[in-house]
Amino acid sequence: MVVHRHPIGIIMIYIEALVGVGAVVALLILLSPSVLQNLSGQAYTLMMGIIILAIGLVAMILLLATYIYRQSRLVVSDKSLIQVIQRGLFIRKISRLSMSNVQDVQADHEGFLATIFNFGTLTVETAGEEDNFIFPLCPTPDTYADRVLEARQRYVHSEEGKQGL
Image (cartoon, rainbow, N blue to C red; front, side, top):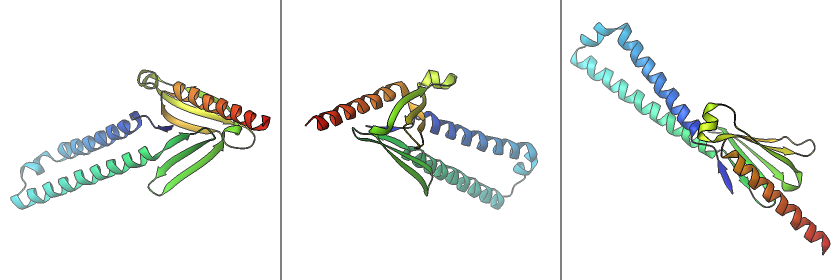
């Protein structure tokens, strides 16, 4: 089973980008309304070219942000957990955890949006010195917490069966 982050996280990034672009446009209009009206044909064409270039740059950045966001995932198998956290285009952290080291799984919904859109933080607590797996913006974390615990139980039963042979 592969768990990707909830889409609400990338939607928030898109909203922030739109608010930023809107603020820059509003600031330009407020600071220099007379300049925009008195532009010559050549200056107007140049300004439109710059605006189109800026829109293309923002679109490219948002596509890149979407790609990076979608690369973070949690993979649950019968024998292990693999957490992939993509922090940037060239920054990726991959952690592996055997099911034998899983102690407990916790699902947290914090806040109004998390409750309404059913996302939260999935925390897999580990045995010993290993770091806990913390997976933020997990869709339906309660469901995935149950699935991780079920995979842990299957692992324990399969190991008991191997020792009995």
